[in-house]
Image 1 (cartoon, rainbow, N blue to C red):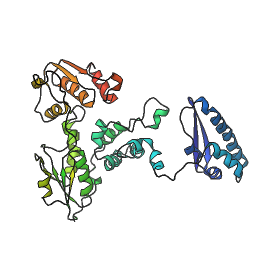
Image 2: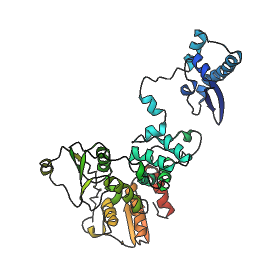
Image 3: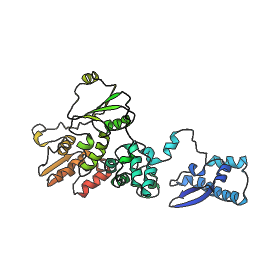
Amino acid sequence: MDTRYLFKRHNTWWVKVAVPRTLREELGFDLRASLKTHSLTKAQEKRWNIVDNLKGEIEGVKNKRKADISVGERNKVQEYIPPTNTSNPQYYHKVVDCQYACPAHTPVPEYIRQISLGNYKEAYMINWESNVFPGILGRTCDRPCEPACRRTRTHEKPVAICRLKRVAYDRKGDTSNLIPKIPLNKNGKKIALVGGGPASLTVARDLLFLGYECVLFEKDPQAGGLMRTNIPAFRLPVEVLNDEVDLIINLGIETRFNTEITSMKSLLEEDFDAIFVGTGAPRGKDLNIEGRQEAKKNIHIGIDWLTSIAFEHTDSIGKKVLVLGGGNTAMDCCRSSLRLGADDVKVVVRSPFDQMKASEWEIEEAMEEHIPI
């Protein structure tokens, strides 16, 4: 029997009612999709009482095996629980809240299901197809999917969607046989990619499978962009970064490292059919405050300082460090300072604590290392 279930929540308890397919067809709409599963206000009690009565009516219909329901009864039901409107395609995205909240619309239920079955390679490939860097994102993603997780409606915390990406990566083993093959016969088109960060690497991955030739220009000696220069190694191990970046590079990208594009005119004069500019926004914020110039030797812009650490130009810092700012970069800077030998690190934020821009878990990790904010 094709049976679906109607779940009804009232404060802290749930009711589960089996609704056979034949009965759903008789009612003419999907009860499960029509009811919202959130806490009720007193103003909604009347409506839910009607649903309670409707439950009894459903059981009566099942027991008596009625062949059909009168038009009047059907109208009475739909007056309180209108049928689901599926005419808008967006409905099908919003059905899975976590997937819809993800910028890449990664099919979260699919890869979690594969993990539950122990199919880590398949889980990794589902992620790789959607978001390109599962191992990196599993450690650094800002997790917009988790606040949207439906588990938060019944439990304090969501499913650990982000960390499950990491699980898939860490346990995947060799996936080389699952990566699609680049076509031997190219389509004759050559694309220039300015910048070697995640945007250009993603474009290259997609175009290579379509037969395009890709040439990547990067001012730094390695690809990865801000993933390499601004995420400290204690959050994103270099081995993981290199593994996922090199996977795309080795598909067949022609790389020109240590090459900064200073003139689009000269690039346009070269033999490219299209140019993709993926340079990101690698510019930090400075403060025009009294004494700034006099103390410039001891003042650093956050993302520039993190870059110097990433490329091993900086390996030490003074004993006392003051970090100005409340974003994720500030959290990375204060924690990096401790690892470079600072004894006294403090973070000063202009906004109230509960309005800090840094991710909640980054703030927690900084405070766990006894950094006062």
